[in-house]
Length: 270
Image 1: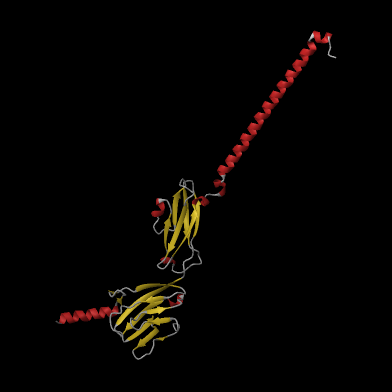
Image 2: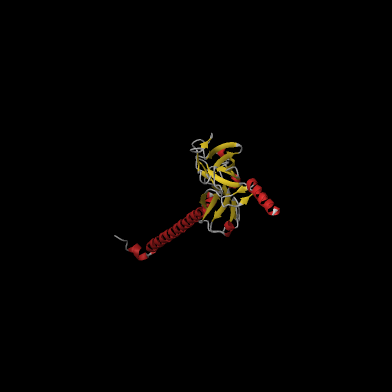
């Protein structure tokens, strides 16, 4: 009998000391909650017992409190006009989040149940930028986040979307290498994400190849065309001159023949 009572007491102490999550189970690890700057977030309690009084704290500072004697919850700076307390469940909603709201929060429900949260306030994700380098065999595409973005970069994950199996093998990597012999007309996309949102940027692999390489075939074709045209003109000119020379020789031979004919000398043309 004593062992059973002692077990219940120990369980009750554990319930106070640890976290009671939204799904009504006990955890000794602070529950992470994520919110976006200028947006709202709700911290959910277990709501497993009748509530007669509620006290929310940020660290040791009061956020909002309520008990049966209050007509409405009382909020404290800097949360005045920025919070909503559900007195039935104990859930707390914070509006117009700022980075200064990021902290550990704790709620006391009827002075019995303690629920703790760690709130992370994150700036909206920017679009990533893509750049690439080229070697004799590979094209390496790198996905970069602007240096001016400093909001919980450790929470950001990378993924890739492209035709190559190499993209699928680049789990949470900020760069990927593609064989240069691949179809360069294909598009490659980098997706960055955090627990709240995602952004993506893409490029066509052909844009990674330097201009002089991209246009080399066109330049070679133009040079070949000019060379062929020059040869054609040269051959045509030589053939034209050859035929002209033969015609001149033929005419001279005909004149010489007429001049050497004795009959034409005896009977000159009138």
